[in-house]
Image (tube, rainbow, N blue to C red):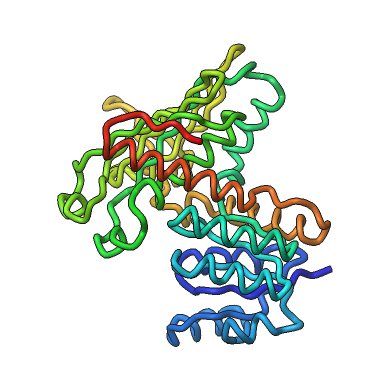
Length: 330
């Protein structure tokens, strides 16, 4: 069976999924919805897909699944539309910036028995998957501490900050999902702090650009997340899991593995610059996992509930950073 896709949105993330779908055995990129004519024409020419409206896609018999890559404030409505249309749904995170709205959309998914996968691509990175495999194999013993470092090479424009929901909801949300995945238990308390050290305009917009979060589970396991909107040396992505028997970690990825040494020391190539390069394989693995789940009628590896729980942690972190107090989750 070939799973026939429509992609909604031809921006950076839409382009990443177009590449992944086109390269995935058992998947076909059939149609695209994109309101910007130039972007739509460029992607259609590159991949040979049709251009259709969302209404046409919902009614199309030659579309089995949709990949929602549109702005966040459209996600929940589109999930409901395509759940009712009987399409399998892959949706980029977050489902919405409101946990209440997410719950409403997930209720529609449940009522229609639709398939929904939320795009937490980092779970599908080969290095991070190897760390998780070491946990599952018992190599590190009982997980005790998780450390996650995620720093962007540069801050986004303030216009993005004003609509993204802020650093906890648009950036740390990936790390909240990773923390849940690696801890193996749900966090019950959240303590967060935020500062403006990169761009004062971000502070003026009501957000932070430098944050740290401590998550704690009922058994006492902890995860520490460190985020910054600026890393002058490249896209900084590292994790470490410490357990009762040992430790597993994943280091940064560089442009190549070549290292040159001399009297002045060692020189290495720079880090991969941003998420499109660093997580290219993860995006491909993610789409392949979605296709496999839909074709086999199996549960998706990441679900709407994963999206909801990560957003609830983001909301709690925002409250904690604002009040200076730890937040206990219901």
